[in-house]
Length: 202
Image 1 (tube, rainbow, N blue to C red):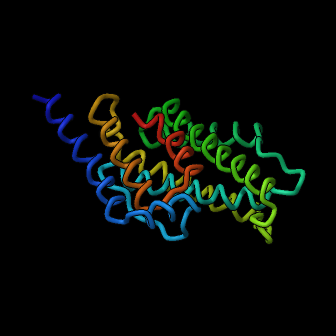
Image 2 (image 1 turned 90 degrees about the horizontal axis):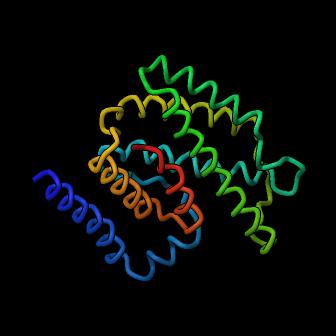
């Protein structure tokens, strides 16, 4: 009984975003392959708000890439990454979250951001005319990332029960992931990064 309900829900979840793509036709597909738009959509389901924050963080990764491209600033920053993960472990415990599971989620956010940065570096190197003409302030970007960390922790706490390992959670992740892809018109690079960012939710 439970398995049939989960399967039915999975079918509905897959059908809704695919229908949205069909309605948009070729034009919508072309738009989704160009770049991530500046207008955020709203992903579906219990994990939709969390997925929205993840997409927002991926967008910030675009600006991180723009701030580093053409400089000697590396994409990898192991010391800062370890500092961030140590901080979220402490904050997770205070929120009643599993520290290691929470750290794994944020490690995925860091990895996903680096997927975006490396992809954009490759794109801009191959097509210099597409490279950014301004360099965002990395200090300001990091302050924004710190705010997103707080929002993500809050949403992780709010969805703690929904993220119990199992089929229902996996269906919720699929719903959030596919709908975010559609409503945010993600290109292939950001679509790949989103899969990475959501892989440890359950």
